[in-house]
Structure formats: C-alpha cells, structure tokens
Image (cartoon, rainbow, N blue to C red; front, side, top):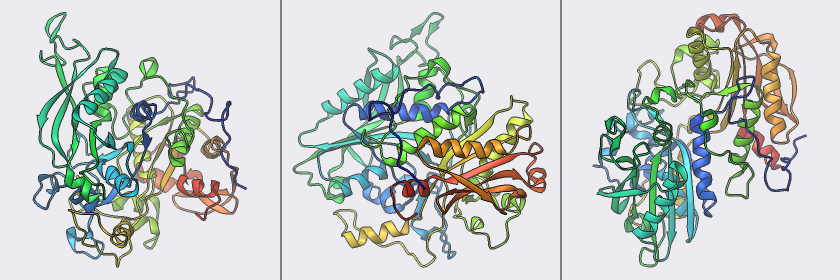
Length: 512
C-alpha cells in the first residue's frame, strides 16, 4: 500500500534539517542542487511558482516559439545537441537537448493566463568540452513575470533584490544593452564584484576576481518580445513581460570563489558548501510554490544524505560498451536509447536509460583517486525513445498554435521519468543499498517491500525487486562480478535504482 506524504509539524512544512551539510557518515547533497533549490526559493517567497519542463525538448519550444528562426546561430550543431531521428533521417527528429530553460517559460505561458510569476531551474546542454569555465551540462535559473504595465524598472528592482539575497546586502546589478532574440530591449546582467564590492581594488592592488572592473557578468535579461507573447497566446497590447536567467554553477562559483567548474560537474564532489552554504529551506511540500515532483525530490535527497550517501550528478551520455558490461540482452529495452547527431564523444553518442552508468563511473574515479569511502546517489532524468512513427508537426511562430497542433507537438517529446540511484563499494553489504531505497520511500510516506529477482547487471541470488504495492519501482543488490570487472569497479560493488515518477503517480492514486 502506498500512502500520501506525511507532513511536518505545523501541517505545511517538513521540519528543518541540516542534511545539505556533510554528517558524521560523510553524506551530503551536491552544492549545485542545494544552490538551485535555494535560489528558486528566493522567488517562491516573492509569490513565484516553480515550473519544470523536459530536458529532451521539441525544437519549436526551444527555438521557434522564442523568436529564433532557422538562421539563428543557436541552431548550429556546435551550439545545440540534436537528437537523431530513429528512422535514420539525421536531424529530422524535431528534438534537441534543451539549450536553455526558456522553453519552460513558453509552456507556462501557453498553459496559463496573466498575471504569471514563475521561476524554473534545471539542467541545460551545449556541445562544449569540459574545461575550467565550460561544461556540456550545466544548470540554469530563469524567471518570468507577465502582467499589465511591467517595465524595465520592475525587472531591475527584481534583479537587485535577488543579487542582495544571493551575494549579500548592498549588492547591486548593472544592465548593459545586448541583443537576445527572445527579449526586446535586452541586457546582460552584471553584479558588483563580490570580492572588492565594486571598487576594483584589493589588498594587493587590482582585484583579481573582476580584473579591476568592479563588475562581473552574471546573466541575461529583458522585456519579452511582443512576437513571443503573441505566439504564446498573450496579447502584447494588454500585457508586458520581463524575463531573466543566470547559470547556477556560475552563481555558486562567484559566491564561493571557485575558479574551476570541474570541481562541481559530472560527479565532481571535491567542493562542499559546508558551513558557508545558504540557509537551508524547510520548504518541501506542494502548495508552497513547489510541484509534487519537486517536493518528493527534496525529501528523498535529504533522506539519502542522512543515510550517509553523497549526491553526485553525472552527465547523461553513454555508449554501447556499458550495456555489454551490464550483460544486457540485445533486445533489452535499456539498449533502446535516444542518440545524438553531434555528441561530445563518438564513443558515448546515446542518452542514458538508467542512471547507473554515470554513477558507477564516478564511484570508479573515486576509488582510483583514493578518496574516502562513501556511497553515491543521484536523482535525475532517464530518457526513453519516442514512437518510431512520430514526425514533428509544422507549427506557426507568429501566433498561438491550435490545441490540436500543441497536442501533436507534445506527443513528439518522449517520456522522461525521474529516477533515483545509489551505489556503494564492496566494503559495504548490498543490504545497505536496499536500506537506502527504504529510506527514500519512507521520506515521502510510501511503504516499500522487496522480493527476489533476476535482472542484469545484478548478481542472481543477491538482487531484489523494489515494490510499492504490486508495482515494481526498481531493483537493488550486488552487481555481477563480470560487470564489476568490466567497469573497473571495487570488488563487491552494489547498486540500487528506482523510478520516482512512478512512485509519485502511485502516491496520488494514479495509474503509473
């Protein structure tokens, strides 16, 4: 039986906890995840609601609806990951890995009526090799306000308030004229240097952080283009809107003086917030600006950290060799993955259908570098393939599409369930990953049971199904020795993975 979530004391919010800081068992949530939640909560306190959208997105939502025509530079293969057409037509799938979270704003405007106040956080993707300041996968926060008589002055005051909350009282922003297709007028957002406080000078002379300028680029913003409003069914003669966006990793780096993004991406856990982190919000329940899914993920993340696991987001790119190492049959559905026309690595052209490949690779790297033993966990998207017969419909980009056209477009976008996975090295018993699954279920008020199962890459006799009622949510157990050897993992490595989206549906009495 699956029950509804148990609310915290007071009926509205879960009790405050410190699970975003490492505990005595070295469990912790990832600093980027914590920063994203906290930044979004700043806007929830202002009356904004948090919205989400898919990571694999239709080109129309990612480009056309945002006033980016066929010739826009962002549509070049060196700027956006394009999903290959399963029928072999190359770029003809009509799908991309979203290059920004702005499509969430389009979906929100198409489905809502003004006034609108929304904020979104999430992963975005661009074909940039990893270096100190770039990553093919990073996180953005974007905000949108739609109402009567909004102006750039309203936008500026919102950004100043946000900067002061993030970087400290008195921090202000500067807007520099720029060009974005989505907004007009547009500006880049600079924030007063957090080291020299805008003075340009430090104890040893010119400030090294801002180069003596006193300002650091933070993001982009502007008034939403009237054409975009019209495409979303909003009358630009009656309403105006402003939008803004900034990178979460960049914000974290500025706030804490980090110089190398590689410390916090693709399994990077060499930096922790510790006592320097923002205040931990106790907000974790729907109805307080969060969706059900967001509330579940926050509660589960805190539960795994309390259980001694370190949150470790990883890149979603995989190659066929990992499925061979898992011992998957040729017809196993996990092999049926979306592939990219222009992958970063030709050896990893596909998108993960399970979180385990990236998480196990992070565990192997930790072992190779002799880092202290800790279990790792991740919450993230598992990608499924679209129907083979689905073709992208042609939608207008100067007026609101019909409901039928929008339904056809949304049907093009494949399901992207949220999964939870955890891995442990061989010094621990595999019962600990089963206990982690139970801790996650208990955090959201669900009853989890187990029964013996056979499923690669787990070792027969040391593998169980994870069930909510009669529904299988996932599996847990010790990995097969052949898989451990093929992937260079510590002997006796164990793993768990479960479908959080299915669990959410069951909690609401819906069909999974």
